Length: 80
Image (cartoon, one colour):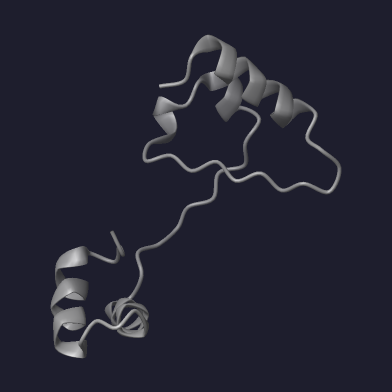
């Protein structure tokens, strides 16, 4: 969904990153990223969170454990 100008700016940053930088580009589908940008990236795949981890994270946010467990079951490993 980037404009041509923003894609070119990102491409320049990927080609000449600031010293000591680590850039992380997140996308729901790698195929949506322009091939020129994708070719300069190292893919890293994340696994869904375990229900127990989701419950713990939600509990630390003040969600009751019973509700957190129901949300974890429905969430499929995602906090969204």
